[in-house]
Length: 108
Length: 122
Image (tube, rainbow over all chains, first blue to last red; front, side):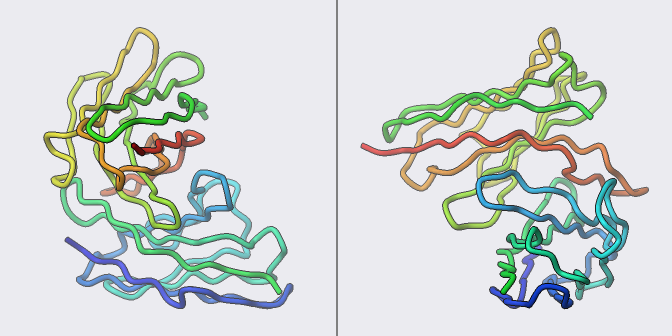
């Protein structure tokens, strides 16, 4: 099973600044990675897929990069509404979807 | 985008079963696959299995094989997830999701139900 490790576990950033979230796969997953945002009490929301493609309706200040084993989600111009837990998810083998444990983003 | 509406919260005893539903607004999943995932309190997400409603073909994560059954009723556009032999560590929010956003090789969970809380306690 591909293990996804996210870091940091918690990130506290001021409004207007930039947040950088990391995700590492235990083996190469090419670009088969997605990022999700989950606010308290809500279902996850797809932000980025294919490592770098924004989903429909996602603001341009969210960007994804990386391939192989190391991936990054960057959120620029942070807003209060960006406070959430962010999960990475991989798919690299027949019906083996795995998620990271999440990064909690706090807006100061 | 089709809205997925799940059934309400459930409280169950250890050893019993729970069946959660997921209905597509408009009454059809079209050609989409319906997946079930769960999230234990304060934990990450875990994929359980999926069904292709138009074909009735189901697949499960090895961890849940033999304990979960996913079905779909094409006539009503409703998918079901039944988990048996419940234990306390099955307490979680259960989500259905469809994958309509795809690259050339992989589809992603872009549409989600609101989640159903299942609590297992004696």
